[in-house]
Image (cartoon, rainbow, N blue to C red; front, side):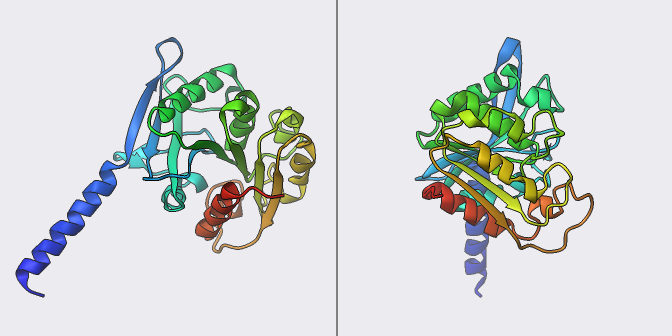
Length: 257
């Protein structure tokens, strides 16, 4: 390859990377009593919908070195969601709650924070808005969907908290009142004691008023490691991220029982 061609290719690739990076940003939004909440914004031209991704554990996006670095299933799969034609918003933690427990995830304060984020997103895109939660993030997604369902198009619950021993478990929330389309997406081999696949049907059965509901219990993936309740095990759909996101996005485009 001639030297001038190599230089042109190099600068072309560099520009592409720069433009790709420039299309992502950390957005900070004012919220309750002078507090702030941030989200990582990944717009997609011509997006068919916007997904707000709600991570598990203590929440957040694992922002380090200027970008999200959490191993959480949704956070590490963020580019896969955008490749499905979706705007992607990764919800961070508010400035006064760096470790979101279940009491916070079901609180009015959490609801206010997320509503402020949604308002900011609507100023950027008019696309339909969905919540997608995983693990403890499904506690948030369910509580938020119940409170804000008139502002949402649907909710996706992955690796949901199913155990009745958990105070904020999804079957213990008022899911009978949820009218939105709901997808419950679970790995058959999830061995976390509070997210067992055999208990996911309790969520499905409780969604008596959901406009459309679907329970998908899937297999697939490879090389699970570590704690079965953590992101790099079946609980986090390890090794099948692309398939999982394709399943979710396809259902969002055409919700069916």
